[in-house]
Amino acid sequence: MSFDAIKDCEYFKDAELARYTTIRLKKIGDICIVKSLDALIELKRVANKEHKKIHLIGWGANQIIKDTKDKIFVKLDLPFNRDYLKEARDEYDLPASVSLNILQSHAQKFGLKGWEVFTGVPASLGGALVMNAGTSLGEISDVVKSVTVLRENNQIEELENKDLFVYRNNKFLKPGDIILSAKLIHHGIEESIKSQIKEYMQFRKNSQPLKSFNCGCVFKNYTPQHRAGQFIDTLGLKNFTFKSLKVSEVHANFVEHAGMATSDECEYFLDKLNSILEQHTGVKFELEVKIY
Ligand SMILES: Cc1cc2nc3c(=O)[nH]c(=O)nc-3n(C[C@H](O)[C@H](O)[C@H](O)COP(=O)(O)OP(=O)(O)OC[C@H]3O[C@@H](n4cnc5c(N)ncnc54)[C@H](O)[C@@H]3O)c2cc1C
Image (cartoon, rainbow, N blue to C red; front, side):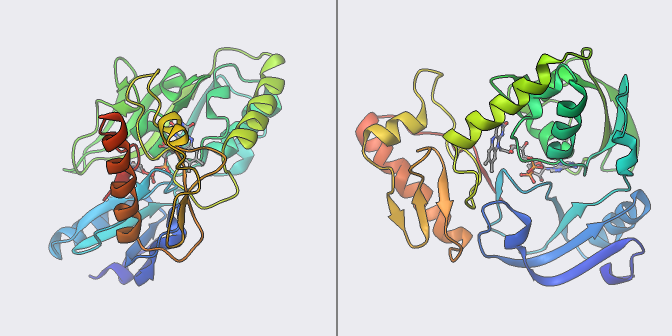
């Protein structure tokens, strides 16, 4: 069987992958949109037979796709009925493909304490769990009860959240594992959460270039006091430009893409920016965005 014959799987050969990441860099590759667990398991079998590596794309908000050779990109679109969020619950069983902005809206409607952490973070639930995404309001791990993972050998494991996460990372995924779903809890209903989400969203709109193509912060801060964006700003590098890429005027740790650049050009731009930073500060910053 080939990828295009798998039931519940939409296969696109030589597709433009730009639309699957938030920075929208140009890259051609093969991608499957997978709509069921059976389809995912079958896809893994076909990929294995064809010696292709599987690479997951969630919301595509923290990745730059560079190398597409011998890879099949996979985007999960697992069954989810939006009616499930018509009422507040004590516990939620959610597929990895659900987006955080849907969860943010639900939290804002009902005032779910703990879920304010989703505010303004562009992500799928799966990608957010991989990264233990968070903001100054907390981390997603604060509201995770368990995570269900499809292991490389196709065993399905539900992992209770005892020590599963660290800062902006997880401790439970091994190469080849795929997050299928998670159970989330909240810490009660509180009216003030509704306005907190609204205000924090406004703060983000004022301090980040949310309307442009970008991938969030490109560099990790060296320490909380040594923030990459601050250094870039102090060096007068806001608006520093290469082809259709530029350092954002709104937030210096963001690179905005006007639409024509490739991932190779972006990687070159980030290298260049980092060497200027190193030259002037003595610090080599680690990339926050992942290049695959
Ligand atoms: C404008 C903007 C603002 C941002 N602000 C924040 C912020 O405040 N806080 C923050 O933490 N991050 C922020 N980010 C970064 C990004 O939102 C997070 O890193 C988020 O967790 C990425 O989720 P994703 O679904 O887009 O994952 P992707 O970028 O698609 O993937 C991330 C990694 O997870 C893997 N993956 C995805 N889904 C699965 C799955 N189901 N199973 C196994 N592996 C999987 C991918 O292969 C990849 O390795 C921001 C990004 C942007 C563009």
